Length: 183
Image (cartoon, rainbow, N blue to C red; front, side):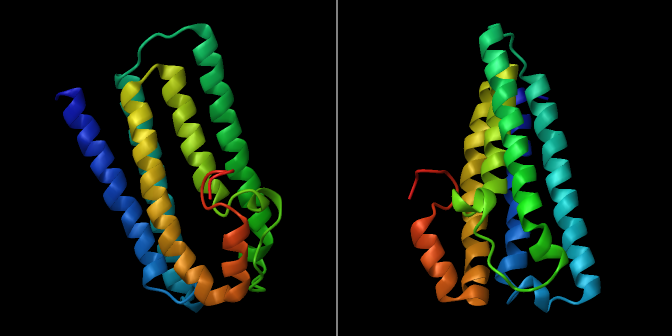
């Protein structure tokens, strides 16, 4: 199969499946409103979608691997590590809100800098891997991923505005959505 056609299929899969995640936010009035069974379903589906997209992305950049200078490789690994750190920092910061339901807006940790740090970390990590692999298709994928995650963040924010009201609206005015220093 042609690499560009495979890129098209993988990117299309990413766009469609991540929009399925956005449905969770568009169809709910808050994750707390789900039944225990539906929470398990949505979380499992979310994990499946993210996992399969990560696997397909690794496959894509391995097929489009082009040797690059050691400085570019080191920069790519550094970006990837920073992206992972941001994702795990975001998860760590949300742990209480997820596991101890108190309906409290989290604005500390990475949430001081961007409203969606895990999305930001994912884009940075994907771009880092593309740089490491010298993969132009991986870089293009990263930019499409940023656009898709921005769209999903919009859906998520509608639910957050409904749940937290004016507090979230004010937070949104102070803190950029996906990229620091980008309002």
